[in-house]
Length: 76
Image (cartoon, rainbow, N blue to C red; front, top):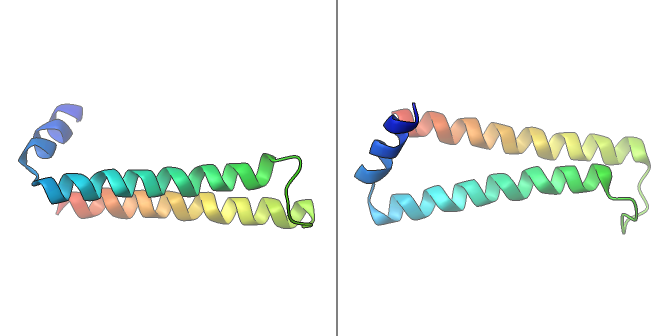
């Protein structure tokens, strides 16, 4: 599997590689933002813990959806 991904990466143009890196960075940003919202003790906004957890789960879910959409778009 990793060998196939590596071979596919070598075939990509410079713009496609750049977009790959940007997509991975956006995925990581959304994921860590969701984790940060859930676990940050001194969160700067006055939000109840239930709503913070809900917001964090939504952000993490969105990052996972983006990741799978990106993976599926590379297979085509």
